[in-house]
Image 1 (tube, rainbow, N blue to C red):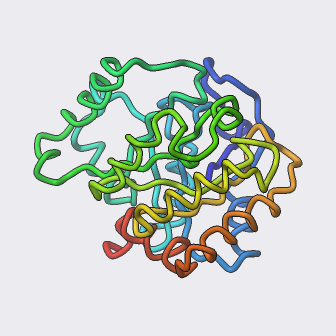
Image 2: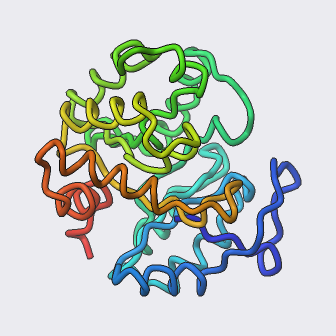
Image 3: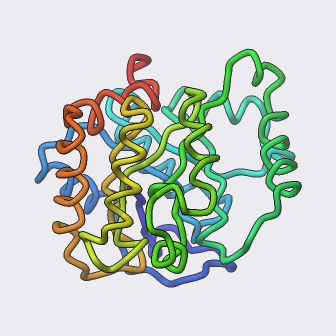
Length: 252
């Protein structure tokens, strides 16, 4: 989930879009309606490296109910700051290439990830979990050209990462891939990911559905839930248990 409060927390000068306010209170009310107790707040791209809004929400949740994924510059962020964030419930850093409108070559991506790994000397010993958003986010064009999930650029690489055990994939926000909630290629992609490592798939609400204000997301939600059940995978696993492992719920 994202918390967006432009009135309380000004957006970055480089923000690529101007969202409607979706405050922490709004997010909390939304989850209460669904009977969801815990929340993972993900830093929106529109705030850049300023995590004030995200951390405000995390502090209000407390580590018993909250986790967060932040964005920061490893060259200017101290180990003390990282430890403080960790104690509050931060469990990840967001590398966002889609929302900022850029394409990243392999060498640049490798250099970027190494910068974050170098932020803590024990990174290799601790192990690094990677979570890929929105089914790997294939382009609309590639979905239209493909006849099966295996035809999608990058799919085989994603499968290898999943099989390695340190990568999770969010089965979420299929409306960002295609406007048809029952698009056959999106369904194929979802089911192939679920087959590969059902224990490495996590569901996310993607609330407040930034850039898709007013969209009825229920049909897209039902399509994902149907795919999970069609593969014979317990909903509890994808909606709860896998996320608990990814976001270190046992440390509460």
